[in-house]
Image 1 (tube, rainbow, N blue to C red):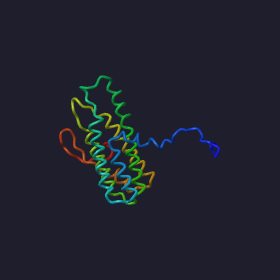
Image 2: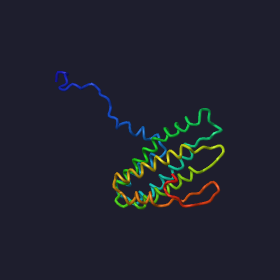
Image 3: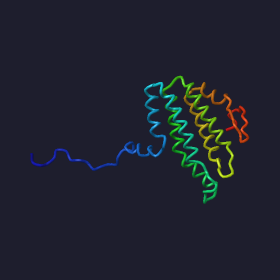
Image 4: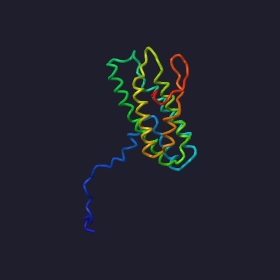
Length: 189
């Protein structure tokens, strides 16, 4: 009545961090697929397996396109570029771990997912063993090993020993530079 508010407005505080999480996640090329996959996993939809397969295919494509080191185009020491590529990859690694965690959290029977993960590592191993005079793949060896360790660690943490057993004991089909194929254990990673 007398132009005086009953409650005074307090000073503006710092905004909560979750308001800006979408901005950080939108940096990756896999963000939209991950959001679709998480929704499908949480709802228990059968389409989640197909979305997961698409995600892994896109993940491989990103590795091939964005993390390759072309020796003809570098202007700094090779080892520094490898470390730079590994650091650039961390956001994708963290997304992969997050997706895998949700997959294990929302699904009791993950055999279909486990087979896709096995195939994913087979493809990564093939990329690791690709030889070229102008291209280097050292960063892939590191990234593959790191993803493999995180994968089996999550299987153990979530007590999904069937998936752990599949990844460890199932043989990996390897194609070498002479185009010969053989089955090898996970130690090839």
